[in-house]
Image (cartoon, rainbow, N blue to C red; front, side, top):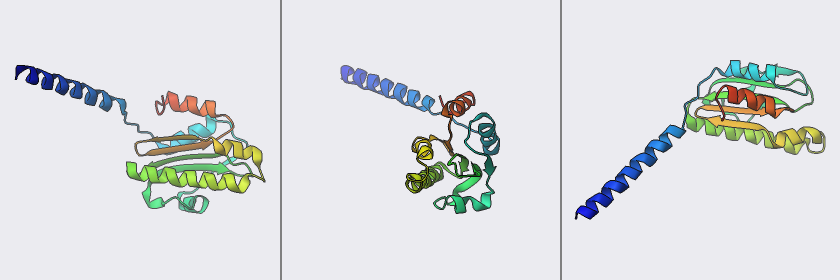
Length: 160
C-alpha cells in the first residue's frame, strides 16, 4: 500500500511539473496594430508604394474576411501591380483570429491562382508570406525582404 501511495505521489508530482512547464510556454502578446503595421511598412522592403486601406473596404479587398470578427486592424496593399501586403489584425477572440487567418490565407491562395501566368515573380512572394497568429492577433506580410520584418517581430517579442 505504501509503495502504491509513493507511486501515485510521484506520478502526481510529474503531472504538476508538466502542466507548469506547458503553461509557461504560452506568452501573452499585446501591441497596437496600426503602429506595428506602420513600423513594418517603414522598416520592410516593398516592390511598390503601399497604401493604407480604410477598414470599411477590408471586405472588398479580402472578401473572405468577416469584419465583425475584427476588433482593430491595419492593412496596407500595393498601389500598383505588386502583390505586397501588410495585414495586422486584432480579432475579437482567439477563435476569431483563426477564422481571420483562414480568410487572409484564402485571399492569398486566390492571388496565387490569378497571378501565376500574369506575375510569376510576385507569386513566389505570395507562396511564402510571413504569417504569425498569436492569441487574438494575426499578422501576414508579403514582402521582398522577410528578414527585416522578422527582425522587427523578434525585437517586439512577437516571434522568437
